[in-house]
Image (cartoon, rainbow, N blue to C red):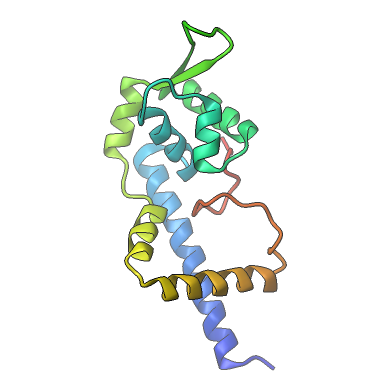
Length: 159
């Protein structure tokens, strides 16, 4: 027998999934990129002497995932790779002019909106939401799944 609370929880979870899907679609229409690709492009554009390892640490993605995403960004002429003049083993990443235009035209990402609104909540409410979300993941058998802090339903390195 299903309870009203269980149904209401499933409906709320479904709304989260639909919002995530809608945010991903809006981003794809505006830029042609996935949320993870846009995040990586932003990290590339954020500083000088940016390396794939630095981006992997900042975004909490695997190095292999960053490599696949950078491959895609380079293929789209949104980013470029070069060797460091000081250490030829280091690969440096830079956003191209096309990449910077793409960043300027990109809509706000759903996780940025979430982060801003979440940060405005009191600490006790943040902790409550985290506990509830972790419990939902456990109930759905996803408690041990590896996941990046990214609101996107697909594989983060998809082409």
